[in-house]
Length: 310
Ligand code: HSE
Image (tube, rainbow, N blue to C red):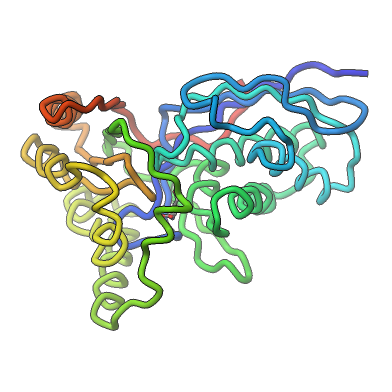
């Protein structure tokens, strides 16, 4: 027996956002993955993986983020039916905009629907975070939380797990620039320091607190001033060619702030939609990489919803 296909859009997300390493995340309107699935009698199988970078994505259900997350939902719901899965990647792996997170969240959300939506949204996030743990080398939910819930998310605590969801300001525009270099999350986490100084801790708490206040009050100027990272981006900067030059190009073309997206290599720039359309920022980064002989894809987008049925 095989049932009707269900289709889920699972959006890209940008995480860390300055001082909120493994804590802050925002869901983006574009790009997104499409995860399709239908209920079968038994066993999870992946019958199609297509789109950018799909050749590197395992189809073994024990190694794939979509199926691992879906299996975790079935386990929590006490269900033992099977699912046939098709994955259409819109987000290239190793991009820093939550490619594995979108797959994991999309898989969890798909299984959640197939199970009759028995779980609360936080449990769906946890099922997706379990898949991130298996495939990315660390239990972090800062991509899967916004991917499931939408908007701006804050992980208050991992144990016990608690996530807060805030609607970002309407005028906040986002430029995503993806230079043609692959940065696996596992490798990008391996270069991080194991300890931070009190000075850096104080700096991060101040900026993180103000970023939350600015997101809630719609103070875009304060958002620009509060996206600051004294620890993680500096440790990773060498993994992304011309990162500082790209951020400077964005700033000199009107960005509020420009920073490393998640574990890289994407460069994220925020802008005020009231005054700019963002294309000029995207163009400045694209030109920089073109001058250096590198391809760079860009998206001019905004904050978006979480996973949705389409
Ligand atoms: N917070 C995670 C990291 C996100 O920076 O490693 C991975 O995309």
